[in-house]
Image 1 (spheres, rainbow, N blue to C red):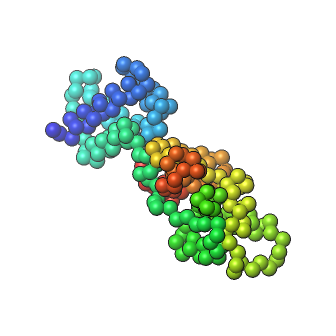
Image 2: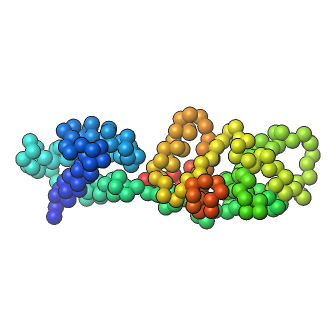
Image 3: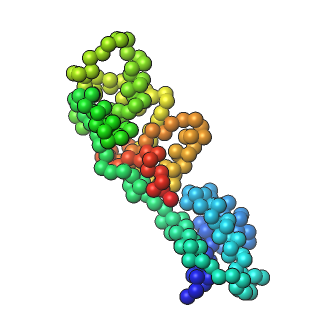
Length: 233
């Protein structure tokens, strides 16, 4: 089978899938179909620009619906339409793109030691637990907020425990960043959209934590930060 035949076969299958997605037997306008499908499938929104170009290629290949081939499709175009079709039908899941395992610390751990571990390993956000219960996130933001609020000019950090700054670890007490908790089967494109919208709204989405139940009391499975976004593609 030629590249052109492969391309048209995959494209036609994707078009039928999108028609079914928007609950329309046949959509006369491909651009309108893509726009409507974007509202129902985040992968369509993610690859909309590529889909426009691939649609133009498809239209160039098929002239007046008589399948008169005007050009030969490259291998790259076949691979692209195949990839997009796969992502639309089977989008990546949160657990697939998350960094794991997640480093965590305890409220009873020494603060200075944990800060050194974070620095040495470039950990930006470390979940903190106390007797198995999630109590917050240790991050640059929590340390900064604590230092701004503390009255003492000279603080002996040597014997301080992470739990000593519990108030500033609590994710409810952050005004400069926020966090999300999702289940492992959450659409990864949704998470990518959250990060993008946060930037547009001048907010900081510190991290997205993947847990067994999508809540902060669930078992922690992975973490997604801005560093992980390139894997969502």
